[in-house]
Length: 230
Ligand SMILES: N[C@@H](CCC(=O)N[C@@H](CS)C(=O)NCC(=O)O)C(=O)O
Image 1 (spheres, rainbow, N blue to C red):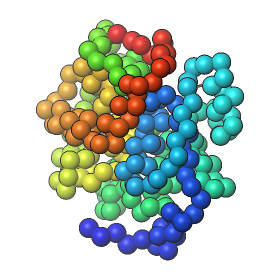
Image 2: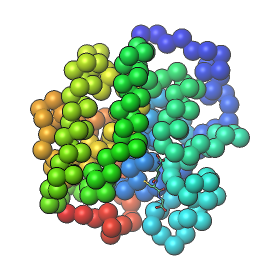
Image 3: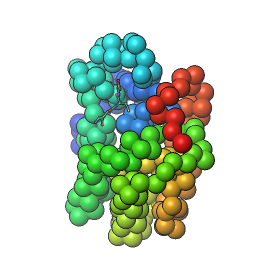
Image 4: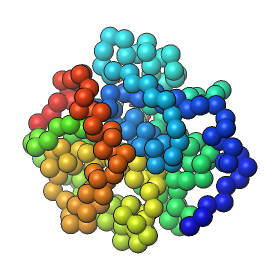
């Protein structure tokens, strides 16, 4: 479907260049979300990688953004910190990222916000470790509950909104970028998942942009012991 761009949207690429500051690709799950969405939105950007968990990490991050956290997007005078805020900013400039129908868009925003503010047990007990495979950890009820809820979200989105393509809402959306690190976690720690989710995970893992990120993660020299679990 052809998209109608406003004059601001048409002109965004004529404005200042984009710089995305991210953490190590192997471990930085929040960075992956913003990076993936910029790739899918077709935005060209310069990438700055800051190694997490070193003596200079905090000072390095402070050169780019105020929160002490990554990712940070720089675009001319504009600095955007926080992964979801970056995705929203790029969605506004490019006219991509959220489903066209209001009902689907509301659900896409709800599941993205649920990811952004929740799943603390999944995030802490199964840290993202993009290159690791066949890791095993003890299954806690709180972790199992998070896995079950993610499975439910993905099945529900695919069933209600996924007819137009392989992604949660058919076409690629910010919700897919928000959940991509969870797909990597499920892959690393071999989560027990439904058949629908298995199919969705295959789409995410085959995605060219994600493959590019994984190849770079494999080449990184850093290891963060606290995130080497299982
Ligand atoms: N809510 C933030 C969370 C960002 C976050 O926690 N980033 C981690 C890396 S994945 C970080 O910057 N850590 C810095 C540090 O631990 O020094 C977002 O969505 O961007």
